[in-house]
Structure formats: structure tokens, C-alpha cells
Length: 349
Image 1 (tube, rainbow, N blue to C red):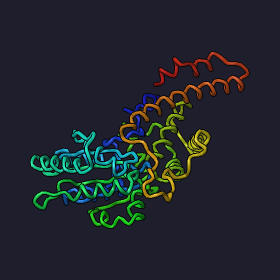
Image 2 (image 1 turned 90 degrees about the vertical axis):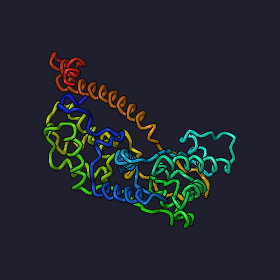
Image 3 (image 1 turned 120 degrees about the horizontal axis):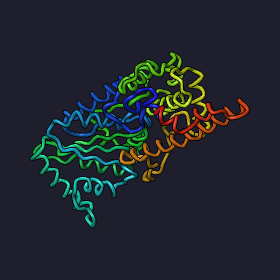
Image 4 (image 1 turned 60 degrees about the horizontal axis):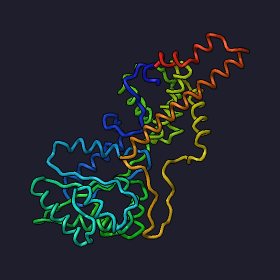
């Protein structure tokens, strides 16, 4: 759509995580330092938490790139309300082990044998658990038991827990002192401040060849930060729609009025969306499953749906523009028809 109009190589504000687009904010640099420090310890847990959309999954993808040249065995799961009975089969499945009909004790023995074999071939075995806030306390306790497995005084498995703030609350509220003592490093990703939000927007634009087209008024940056509360994913949503608006209006300059229009449209489309994307803390029964969230495997599907949604919105906006011009001009002229025609729009792309 707007990429060709503004001569961009690709969309700068995609919702799907792309390690090549990672902006090195203060929070992300500190989190990466904690991850690497915890990894070098070779045991226990490393925990990264943050609100929805703060870039946790992207951070882990970047870490995997950093570790790609090291001799490690990495496996990952995206937890979906796993409890103490589900967590071992989920890990065994990811490791290619048989799990159907196996008891908990048998699975623990199978995993220990497999991890021992990995240990002889690799210097490190790492399990990454994404969306870990959906784990029940019993599932977290089972992970602690796995982390205790060792060979000759050397831990067989290190575990990274990545999730929303509810993960931290679950560990604290359920008095999981033994697990807390196994956490080697922990960091909470916070939303960006105004100056970092501006730098983030410019970083993403420049990464796709932006050459000050469209020109962004200075107040745009402050307005986007205020509306997004500094959460990267919300910044992406707003900026993507702002560029789409500029394309539809065929303008090469975007100001506060354009941003106001876009924000009003977003509020009209999603009036029930709360100010923050992270759900409030809820007191739960000890083993009640937590709400499921989109795993990394579903994010490409979400991006496809987002593109389809944008195309439908584009058609509706063009029709609205055409009708508005007809009403203001009394009758549609040939010029008006050309502006709104699909042929002209495709040429702009």
C-alpha cells in the first residue's frame, strides 16, 4: 500500500517480531545483559517479564541469534495454560521423545537420560518458556525439579521464563521460595520514555529507507507516545495507520491533525480496548488456568489477518472519500473518478 507511495523498502511497523528491527532501548539492552549473564551461569532460571507488546518475544529471538554460534542445545515451548501434568509431555514432545502413556516418573527419567546425552555433545542445554504467565504453580514447580537435574555437579538444563507481569505475581503470591532462589537473573521490561519512543519511530523508518517522506511534524512523536504509553506494539499500530492515512490522503506531510484523525478512528474501531494492553492482576484459585494469549506460532497468522483488515479498511476509506467528493462537488467529475479509481490507486503503490 503506502510503501511504494513513500518509497520504502517494506513496512516499518509490522506487528510480527523481527530481530533485524530490534531497537536497542535502555530496557532492552539491560534485559539482554541479564539474559547473557544468566546464560553464562549455566544453571537455574532467568526471568524476563513485561506488559503485552513491550518486545519480550523479539528480545528472545535476538538472544537466539546471539547464541547461534555457541555450542548449545536449545528447545522452546509457548505455554498455553499448562499445569503440572502437562508440562513434562510438552517438553518431551519438543525434544522428540515419546510421552503418551508415560507416567510422570518415567518421563522425568527419560528427560534426564536425554539431557545427559545432550550434555555430552553440547556445552549447554537451554529451555525457553514463552508466555510463562499462563503456567500454574504446579507446572512451575515441575520446572524447578527439572532445573535440579545434574551430572557431576553440573546442571543438565537451564530455563528462561518469559511472560507478563502476572508471572512474577504468581511466583510471589504462591510462596514459591525454592524457585525464587533458583532465579539467577531477572528483569522487567518497562514502556519507553518519550525520547526513546521518538528514537524508536525514527529507527524503524530509517531501517526501511525513509528519507523524510512523509515529513513528520514534531508534535507527532509526543502524540504517539502519549497515546501508546510507550508500548512498542501500540506505537506500531498507530504509526502504521498514520502512514496509511497519509497514503489515502495523498499527502507527503503528516501533522497533529492527521494523528488526531487516526486516533479517533482507532478508538471508534476498538472502543473497549483499555489504556494499557496488560490485563489487571486477578486473584485466581491455585490451579485455575490463566487466560490464553497468542503464541509466537500464531503471530504470522495475526499479521496476515491484520493485512486483510487493512485492505478492507482501504476500500471503505476510498469509497467514503469518493462519496464525500460527490456531495461537496454536486456530482462526480471525471477527475474525482480518476482519483478514487482502483487503477490510480494501484499506480500509487
